[in-house]
Image (cartoon, rainbow, N blue to C red; front, side, top):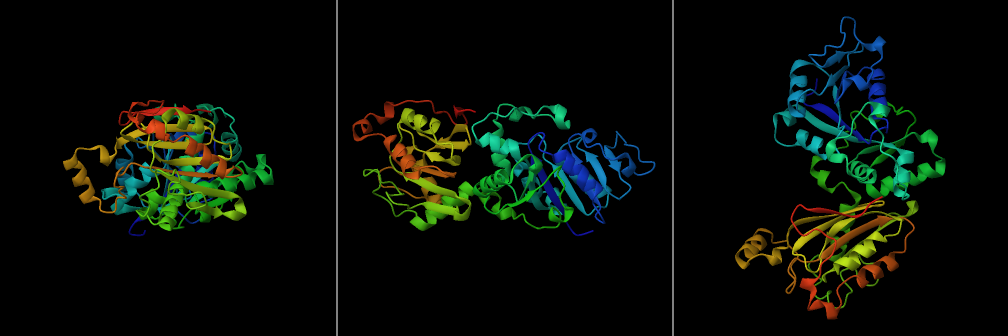
Length: 423
């Protein structure tokens, strides 16, 4: 066995085909001895012929040994304890962790990458997301697919996810992926599969897509790929990359007089405009301004976002709000969360301390760090019309003097979240 055991982290919404994939991998492991760690082993229903002789499922141990050398393990305690015990007790070539009940795979990946006893034993090899392709497309078409109940796969919704729209969860899972299985491909046309690939490309430009039916995929495409780079996990989403690339092309810090003209960082041309893949028809642009939004008008613009915008994310400066408000949109779902205060709003001593610790901070003489920085990713939408609508939502010169008294539907207390638009 290698010094560290490679880990494939598997995510996907209920009914997408994760359990079918786990069964497939256990059955078709070939000469690999793999371990699969799941929340509920009963749902995997490993083929009885594969269960090793004399190894009826040991409920106390939570481990079923298979005749081909693989094992299926039930997560009976916390994940860290389980994977450490597995590595100490058994010899296997690769571990598959099903991140069932977790909205996206980042928390699982971090367990294996932070300084811990787990990281000393394992290394993350690949992040894999399984999509029900039809459901994925429908969730971006403005339709409201029903959540799949436990009856389809035996899985159960985590309470934390119960109020999250499906599009939110699927987007986060795709954004943190190295490989995306477009499952149930037999239920989609070639054009629809092309569209799904286009959406995945917009959300995660580097992800490899594989079209599957009944989660049938060559295990070699999921194991020993070495696709995960722990230094890039926070930069995997396409929106972060678009933001970074727009910033580099712009020369951060060079735009100190953009607020009064309403031209903002992005100007009236296509500065901050990024084409991830022209051939796929996916474009993104970054909208930057150093003038606050009128909260009610911004909410109206967001609620009226064109359906072609599949993802937008970023921080907004709102009149009457000293918190940084993060906007997250995935298809028809838009949420806003209030984070920490603008550094410029802090007492002078604290403000100077923050600035000395962050010399790269883009600072405006008058507004400090207050600014809007939003990325929009999508297909077939009128970018200029959207820019104009956003510009029109900024406070006017007349409103500027009374901007602190403006209120709207956005959260104002740190950690508070507001639904701006729901499916």
